[in-house]
Length: 433
Image 1 (cartoon, helix red, strand yellow):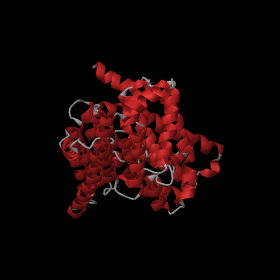
Image 2: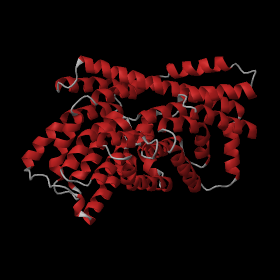
Image 3: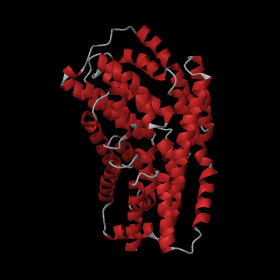
Image 4: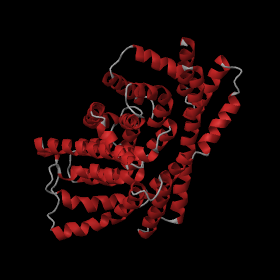
């Protein structure tokens, strides 16, 4: 078994390190392992079968629709509406407008499903506005980097869909499980911003103009389109009216209506959004085909079972195992993006978590959070790259500004490990019904 594992690590390092696409690298690794250790196994037939399984998977139908919805929303005035609708209510809140990024990302994440899209859409308005108003630049960029990751945790989430397919777990239960952790993490970010601003008021810029209650209520109308979209997507799913795929269809239609009503979406823009969504889906599809093919191969070779048995023989307590996995995923996040991390490691780490007493839903949320941490881990952290494009700051400065939010996320992982009911509470109610 040592030769198999050494060959696996060698092949995957060689292929991915050469700059080959992740999906092709995973397929090449699986084909190499079969050629060396199972030469009589029909590799092409196995690859064709896995490709067919991915293409026809009904659970994956929601993925391209949610990606298309995010692309359409990126071409609307949703981010401007978030700023104008929320800012009048934050005048007396400790931290004032610093909370705009967290609240904006939380609301946008509930209809987007993409961390990078959430960061880019909300950040292109809030980052510039807050910095121009005199708010501390590092506090603004750090909060945007941390809050932008909520696009993966607050449902609907593209990462959750992919995990649900690979782990054979209900996507709707995963979506429901992400609600409480997502809101708690957003609350933790806002708590940090409030405390930091209270300790150092110089971090804050100008105070928003005083507004009457009537003016505040009028400002809320700017949030109407987004709230309508949230009600259509989230309400239809959790109300039992629509499946995730049907809810995604509702989201695409409503986002198109919003774009055309705001006169920011044209036919040319819709075609471009569809093209971008198709490119993203093709990339994700190739990665999933490669990941499932490689997972099947190493399953035939007995690698996951061997590693799980070895680690279980160490008698490692469940909490220590989670700490080890946390460090493992953070290190991977320095050289890989989140989707690649999940699809490559899931066949090995999921059995370990189940053996330690954690269920698939809990481990799915854990994985989403550590992938969020990978999004803000240099040098590959994609959210950091998005923010660099928005602000022009150096990667080093953005990374330092993001560190407090990275620490908050690491602490939150330990919290859900100690109290797994934070995740399992709502899905348990769903199962009980």
